[in-house]
Picture 1: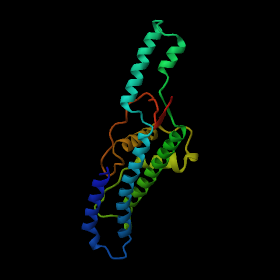
Picture 2: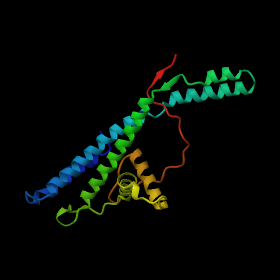
Picture 3: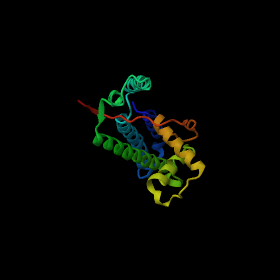
Picture 4: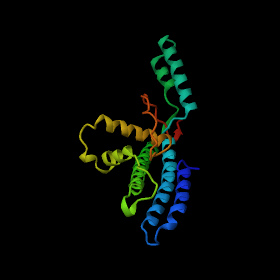
Length: 211
């Protein structure tokens, strides 16, 4: 079950309650169907994105072993128990990431992230429709982060100032955090706090064993 499955079911229930009063040629029939499809598309994009992220995310158990071995060998080298060449050999990785697999995984992350924000932006635009395009009972959709990411980082990056405002940076960080945790949030709900600072992590992917 995807993270947008519940929203999709609620939206279908909403349409069943309000669409019966619309004329057959009312454009909202098509627009309502587009929102339904967009929610399903967001789930599909997230599944592909998770797979791509998994391919460049270190396995915790493997990473722990690497770090423990490094610390042990560093202590031995510091005590003079290992020659430099032997120390280097002992801490050298036993697996080598496939460069093409890394490039493909990062390309997938870029492609699916763009697709996510384009899809989410279009869905929000439909939900914000006014006049004959409005959906009764749907409140104001607050999605500043989606708009900023779409406009500043994807659609028109060449028009963005060299330095974004602190507010824009904060909203972009929140958008990335929401994407990682549970996806887009709209209506009157708010995202959680901006993620804390974290150091860089070693990069692993599906690899081939040496030797």
